[in-house]
Each structure stands twice: as structure tokens, then as C-alpha cells.
Image (cartoon, rainbow over all chains, first blue to last red):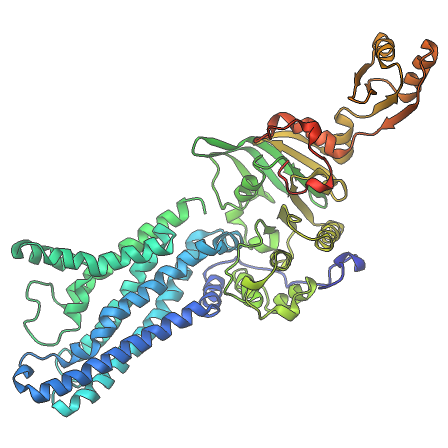
Length: 281
Length: 317
């Protein structure tokens, strides 16, 4: 350790350049980028996302390919695009929800939030910067994963002759749309994180909304179920990753379901910022 | 520099800060004293707008905290050394703070060097000892070259070397013309560092004065007398307007009279005196006396049997 700072009578620090303007979104964005890239949990979560999504999707595609070769009758109604994106849509959203929630709840569990707010007391600025940086990371990783899972899956399905191409009807929309909806689910969890400020509660609620509620809704009588299911945040992935016409007739169109999930994410983000600004930290 | 007016904060039914008003002047070490639970940390959280007051206002350099253009250039605060993401390295922790206020990157290396942590800059902070965490927290407060530094119980849990280091740092910061606002529940800590004192108990202001005034304001000097005839001396002193009380071992403590007067009284009455000493009230005693009624949790043991002194550090008064 160092010697006493008093020995020189003056702290050995250089003079800061004089300041103009004020601490605002630009600095907050740079800070949040430093934060997200400087903890290991970010890398572990994103590696898990890549391995689980791409790995499982490759396995599913390879298994489907050999199944279709031995059971050609099953080729009717087979959606090779949706099959190659299945693990990314189903499990990828969950992993990204964990990261989205943790980006904000980790500030509370570690106590970092007190330091963050004392250097940037304009809470809206901090919140927006945090949400934007997470959204940017989620979007880039989701697009990468979605395209890699698609191309790898189609390569593995080619021996069955059922492989899709991006130029096929609805295929590009499915690949891009799945990436966008997975990002939205992460944003939804981010909002929940600001509401609950607690990792376990946030992840439990996100899983509940995306996995448990749809199962419960499925137990309802059909005439109720088809009315409710299109309003769930979980329905967009089924709809937007499908390229076979006529799938999910009781839902809105792909972008209609996208809008429903977007509305859930926006609602969580708005509730989050209101509480984030209002409550004691 | 910092103006606190009519500050009140409740947590549920509990009033943590109750109509508190005071000002903190620049270029001084101002000690913020009070027993544990007196509302010191709450007041500091309110200054930083981490919590919102139920009533009252606070300004820093005439502005609300959230309206400061670059908060880190105005106030550097360390409330809790563990308010850090343990998975982040010391360097990245400081970098992400510096970036919010558009401070140059080189500043991070400078403050790390200043607190002697350059060698562990790339280490994750979860492995740091309390002393190292405290240094990292202090490095963060100095990033923005702030006019005010604010520390909450900075020496709690530190070893003697760490305590000395912080004391010297506070003196240096004040000598540079910065305002230093530091809280403690230990008077002995303030005795060596603070110029000015703000004393609180149960969320209320008890004293706002210089260190010298604080000592003078309390019961002040007393005279200790040891005599084989305490009863006779107590009566003689009472007749001259002093108050004397006897200790268990027969030693008298006289207030309201000087040593010379007590000696003269004993001589006139023909009472033998074996010891006659002037006892200057220590800051610790003055503090205990002033805050005695406002200690929140009093132990169920008589005060006399509790050793008072540096050994009780951190026992929570």
C-alpha cells in the first residue's frame, strides 16, 4: 500500500479540463457499455445463449432430417425454418430474459445502484442508457444466433430435401422476426427487473409469463383459449417463426403478434422507469 | 456549500430524520456525529437523492443535487465501500463512473495510483479486503476533483494503518480547500480531525458549532478531590455554591468551582486533601452527555461498568 497522502500536502492529481455541458445520455451510454462488458456474467449468459440455441437447433435439424428420410409422409406441413429456430426461440428468449433482468437487478443485489445514482442522479438518463445498451447487445447477439441457427439447420436438413432458403415465402421474416421477438422478451425482463429489483422474482415472473401462463391457458376450453392466447407475450414466437400458411389461425398475423409482445415489453419498461424514478434507491 | 433545511424522512412509522437544518461550509472538516441510528446515513443518502425526503430541502452549491451539471465535480461521496459490483475490476469500476461525468480516462489511473491500488487495478473487487474496498471507494470520490467529499463512518473496521491513512487524507483534502463532511459515532475520531461539528440524536440537531465550543458548552472542567473526610468537604463545597458528588471509592468530583477554590475551602475547613486535580472534559464525555437522552438502544447494564475509550470502537455506543 501507499504512503500517507498527506506527506506532500497536496494530492498528486493532475488538473481536470474545465467542464462544459452536463452529464447526460452520451456519458451514461459509454458507462453502461463499460458495465455490461466488464462482468463475466454477461459472457457466460451470451455463450450459453449461443451454445444452447445453435447447438440444440442443429441437433433438432439433424434428427428431423433423418426422421423425414425414413418417414417421407411427415414432410407434409413440415416447417423447416421454424424447426431450425426452435431452440433459439424457446430457450434463447429465456436466457436473454435472465441477462435483461440481471442487468438491472445486479445493481441492487451488489449495492452498485447507490454508487451509480450518486454519480448520475438523473435517474431517467441512467435507466434509458442501461436499457439502450442492453437492447443493442441483445439485438446483435439475437440476429447473429438466429441467422447461424437457420443456416446451420438448413444445411443439416438438406439431405432430406426439405431445406428452406431465405428467399422462400416468409423465411426472412421468420429469421429476422424471431431475433426481434427474443430481444423484446429480454427488454420485457429488463422492465420486470426495474419493477422487482430482485433477480429471483424477476426471472420467476418472466418464466411464468413466457412458459407457465401459456400452459394454463391451454387448459381452458377452446373457445376461451383462442380468444386469450393472442394477447399473451409468449405467442409471438410461435407465430413469427412459422412459414407454413394456415398455422395458428386464431392468432393475429406475424407482425400483429410482434406488436402484442412489444406492447408487453413497453408496458414493463414504462412501469419500470416510473418506479425507478420514484422510489428510494 | 451544502444547505439542509427542515429535512424530515420517515421509513414507515419510524422517523429517521426529524426537521434537521444545518449548513456545511467550504474548506473545513465538518464532523457529523451521533449515536448509531441517529440519522447520519439517512441524511447523507438524502443529500445524494438516493432517498427522497418527506419534508424539507437540500441544496448543493445552491442547486438540487439532480440539477448539478457534473455531480462528480461537486460531490464525491463514499457511503458504503461495498456498494460495488464485485465481479468488476477496480479499473473498470472507476472507468464506468468516470464516463458518466465525461471525465478523462487518465484520471482513473491517477486515482488508483493515489490510493495505492495500481497493482490490483485489474483484479475483481469481490476479493478485496475492507481496507482495499475503502480505498477503491475513496478513489471513486476523487475522480471528479470534487469541491465536497462526504464519507460515512470511513474508519469503521479499518486497521490502525488504514485509520491513520484516512485521517491524513481528510486533512489533506481540507487543506486543499475542499469541504470534508465525515460522519462517525466515535467522538475520539473527530477529536483529531474535525474543525466543526454537527451533532444529531434521534434525527434531531443537538449541536452545530466549532469543536472548541462543543467542549466548552458541555459540563466543562471538573475538579477531582481525594480526601479521608468526603462528607465534610461535600457540605463545605455546597455552602460555597459548588456541586460535589462522591465516587464509589470516596473520590469527589466537584463542578462549578475551580481547583484553587476547592483547595481554599478544604484549607479553611481543616479538611485533609490527598489529591486535587483538574479534569478536562473529553470530547467523548461531552458527546455522551449531550446525546445521552437520544441513544436509541441502551444496553441494560449500568454505564459505569462499560469501559469507555478506544477499546469500545464499533460497539455502537
